[in-house]
Image (cartoon, rainbow, N blue to C red; front, side, top):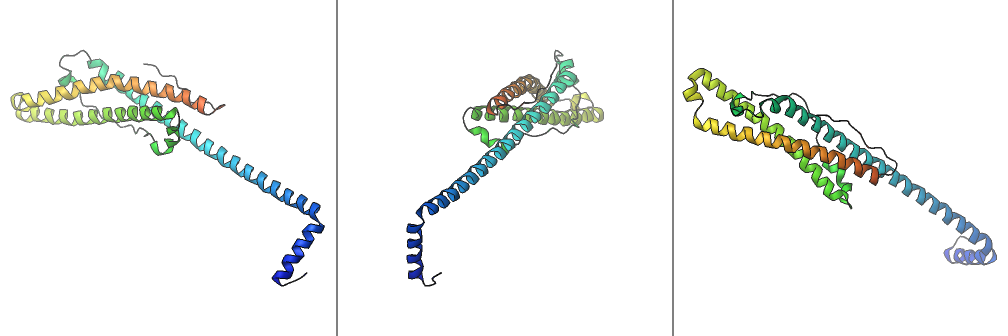
Length: 214
């Protein structure tokens, strides 16, 4: 086989002319093999991305379901018993939330920004934010109520239960009751819409189905 460049080029040209059928067959086989490898790799990557997106959507549905159960329990066990009490801003006792609720991983759901999922993602974020606001408001009110009880115990009702304290507790309590009703509805709607989205966006996939009773 020749070694200098000019001779090598001439040798290759002559070889291809004399063996064009074999060369074309070899080139075709090489191209076909590379193309099939490319298709396999692309389909593998697409399947991997689909699985990751489906897992993220189900994780979001799980987080929403846990938050919804939490909101329903708060409403049933804490808020409803005092709902019609005109003095609920005083009689609603401090409530400590010990449970840890999963958060919505928005970063893993950015794939939903394509097409119909964009508006749904916004609704999921709003519903989760409302739940976090409800929990935060309950905790803040509990702290203020405990301070009020301590002041009444130490200084008497005339000083410990002044007009400003009553107004603040009433405003916070009324806001919590209004928010409690809205949160349950929004989370319920978000859960159901996400279930529909999953089964439409991922044909053949089974979304979470949770029976939620008041």
